[in-house]
Each structure stands twice: as structure tokens, then as C-alpha cells.
Length: 531
Image (cartoon, rainbow, N blue to C red):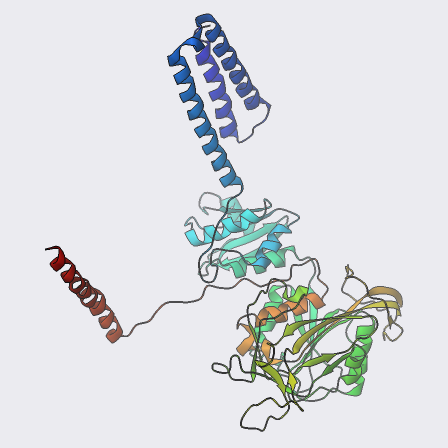
């Protein structure tokens, strides 16, 4: 019985060893630990009764020391456990370089099946590994593994790895290439590939052509960056012309009209109206030269385009008064998580709305209040000054999102469908392909109107949140409500300071000569007083 204490400690140590090594705290390690603890308590009670241990002062002091030490160990263990389970990290970098963007977090947290990143590179880049760990923190379904191509030729054969591809994303039987060997693994690329992997449907986005637009004319078109970004989201962009066509194509998830310098033909407007009546989704982007003759369509939704231009003097020193700086985004899924960050709109026009039964409208782009912005009617004046009689005070709506329930039957022309006069919540859509035969419909039609078209052009698309506004508008219109709408991840900004030789010499002299000399001069009076 005297050596039973060591047996008890052995049982406890064995249980802990089995649990930590196997990483499974099941019945075996639990039983060993419980038996060891129970026998240890029994041994202590037996020893105290046999030797009258607790009557001794030394035993009491030793017991207090043991209890205090045990309490410290338990507290430290709990702190470590809570720190490992509920870690708190604070990113103090300017652009939140070590924090995932909201879209990345929502995508990973919404995973329904396991996803794994395979990196065929034994050199584990610290920055890339930290990025992958951040993704893994969001969901237990996200895993990653570095692979030595020499040690695991079976994986090399499975993925068809060659000298070009370095990383793959896998989910079930689907695989997506992430980056080549000469490319870094960034959040933008990983999030876009993850979104493409979990999206089972490829939607078609049509851009209306035939009115002197700068859209989809070539790979170097005015909106090529926007088209490339759509492709990364499994949204295929195609041109749309109504020549020899009787209606909008059945596979059109969204139709975009923007950048036109000529009015649409009356027949084209009727076809767009029919498209909306059969549950279509339309994005209208206006430039300052024309209203595109869309008043009949817009009036059905209670929308009109103000002929005046928006003047914003808050950023005139840098961009000029013709560029509107927007950081008020209302309450809408398109702009959720935007916070107070900025998007830019050059030569924008205000949008007016009125109440129409059955139409639910939400402004999501609002300019600054007067006197920072207003709608200017006199553009020939050399001095911009608000005119109480002809101008309109801000805040002004530059973007409106509208939806309307569709109830009825539709055929190829779509003219039999009708709008419902009752508002409804967002309805999930299982298919974005419109029916070609007569069928009953019970869905929504969505419309987004933005009083500017060049915000999504190549020169503005990557500035601040401009690209996010365009992509989120298209995503919301496509009724992909199962997909997160938020800010796309951003690349790190280059903050390096480039000094000329003269500036570098001046900095060296200032730091090695002038500053030490100032310290010496300041120390002389102190030394003189204490002398």
C-alpha cells in the first residue's frame, strides 16, 4: 500500500499520454485518469488516518503549498485551453493585411462539404501559410496540405501537376487550379476559386449592344476588367443585340444596359419590359449624355432620371467637383459591410423615385448632404454655386435597387405575365433559365438603376469600392441569394518610400549628425547645473 501512490501517478500519466498521442479522449484515457485520481484520493485518506497526518504543522503547510501550486497549474491550463479554443487576434495593419475580408469569411463558413487546398511546394511560405490558417479558423471543413512531389507521386498524377501549376482546390470530385508556380497565393485568388468551386451553376450575363456602347467590343474594351471579374464568379458575359431576335434569351440571368450614347428603339424597350414581366433582372447604368429613352420602362417602377448633374465639392481639390464621393450606402444586401468606405462616380445623375404599389425600392448609393453636394442645372457657369430655384440639395440617390413580385402565366413573349400589387420577401430561385413554354410563375423581378455608367469602366473599376458595387449589383440581380454579398478581398497596398540620392543623403546626415548633436547640446546645460 505504501507504493500505491506511484501506481496511481502512473495510471494518471498513462491516461494523459494515451489521450494526447491518439488525440482521442474516449473511454480508455478517461478511465485510466479517473481510476488514478480516485486511488490517489483513497491513498491520501488512508495515509492521513494511519499516521494522523493532518495534525502535523508541516503536513498542513505542505498541503497548502500543493493546493496553491495545483490551483496555479489549473488556472494556467484553463487560460491556455481558452486561448487555443477562442483565440483573439488584433490586426493593426493599415489595410488589415492579416484579416480575411467579409466575403472570404462568409464563403468558408457557408461550406456544406469539405474543401482542401493542395500546395505542391515543400517551401512553406510564411505569408501564404498564415493566410491558409486564417481560412481554416473559419470552418472545420476547410483544410490545406503541403505536398512533396517527390514523396507523393500518386497525388502528382491525380492532379496532373506539371511545371506550371502549384496549388489546387479540391471538393469531392471537383478540382480548380488556384495559382501557377510563378504566382503568389493571395486571398483574392483563393476566394474567387473557392466561390467558383462551390457554385454549381454558370449564369449568363448579357450586355446590350448596338447603341455605340464601349462594352464587350474587344478584350481591351472599356469594361474588360468587369467582364473578367464576372468570369471569376462563374458569370459568363455575352453581348446582346435584338437584330433578328424576338425576345431576351431564355438563359439571361441578368441584362445590363449601360454606356449607351444613343437612345434605344421602342421595340427594344418593349422587349426589356416583357423580360422584366416574366421574372427577368435588369441593370441600368446611365451616362450624362442621354436618358436612353427608357421612361416607359422606368415609370412602371416609379423611377425617373434627373437631367441635372451631381456636383460634389468634398473631393474637388483632388478629383474635381464632377466626381461624387459616396460613403453612405443605406441598408441593402448589395452594400452590406461597406461601412463608410468610398466609391467614386464621375458625371453622375440623380435618381428620383415615387411610390408604386407592389414595388419595393431601396436607395443604396447616397451622396453627401448639402452643402457638400447638390444637383446642378447650369453647367456652363464658370463658378459652381447652388441656385435655390433650379438646383436640388443633397443627399441625392445615385443607385436604387427595386424588386417586384411576378404572378401569372408566361409564354415565349412574356406578355401574359403581370406584376403583383403585394410586396413579398425575397424568393429563392432554383433555376435561372426562363421557360420557353407556357408555365405558371411565382417569382420576383429585380431592377437596379445607377445614375452613372463609367464607375465600372477600366479606369475606375479597381478604385476603392467601385468594383464591389458593380459585382454585388449583378450578384443580387442574378438572385444568387445563397451567395454572400460583401466586399471582395483587397490586395496589399504598396507603401514603399522611394528616396532620391539627395533625400537619402539628407536623411543620413540628419539621423547620424544632427539628432545626436541636438542631444549633446541639450545635455550640456544639465551637466553644467549638476557639476
